[in-house]
Length: 173
Image 1 (cartoon, one colour):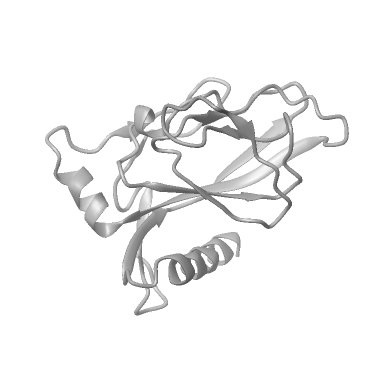
Image 2 (cartoon, rainbow, N blue to C red):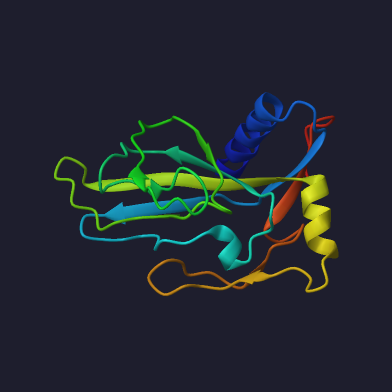
């Protein structure tokens, strides 16, 4: 049921934000971020440095209040270094360039927020995805990162990290 709800939501985002694109690749399963007090969940990074393809677009949906240190810090443009915490309420949707803009967490010290949770996912247009697949070095693989994620190796390709969303039908592959 969760996967069906997620797929329906991605379809809604696809229709609302990319109406001129019949097909988009989307992250097969969203990333659940949980930041307890005293923890740093995601160290500062750009997604491209972790092997994500250029053109990928990040989305974040807070499940709890995000503010101050119980949030994510993102620079306003690539290389600016002017990090500011997000100030978001549950259910809002943030679109950002995590591929090129450095982002991450500071240790969570907010007293009124026990745990910060969000769902993060990524979309990439078909042309950008094909450019990535056709490059000389081929697709990259995401590996578990100590204190950040624990998962099997995942290739940034269709059928593994990505699925194809087709607006013309209710199905994806």
